[in-house]
Amino acid sequence: MADFVLLYSGGSMPETEEEQAQVMKLWDAWFAEIGSALKDGGNPFTPAAKTVTADGTVGDAKPQYTGYSIVTAGSLDEAAKIAKGSPVLHGGASVTVHETFEVM
Image (cartoon, rainbow, N blue to C red; front, side, top):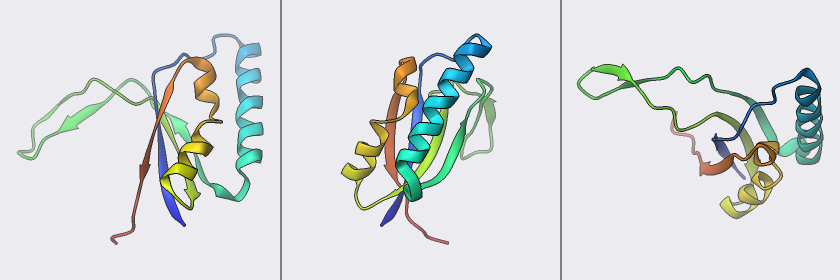
């Protein structure tokens, strides 16, 4: 088993309290479906971002990701299958799945 980061890109945020409640129900249902494979439900990102380069320069960044979750799965394909259920897809976002590995 390995950990996989699901990076969310794009999509829209719910505007009303009713829409927010509906979206939270989708997240709760998805988390229940994932069960023990869910390692970290994650959070959305704000649009504020900085890039730090190898020479130490810090500058504004154009954010490409809007949030994340971390799941445990047996393979990249299995993690991608889990990602297919992500509620961000209902808001027009896409999901990029990356396998992580322990080095420290």
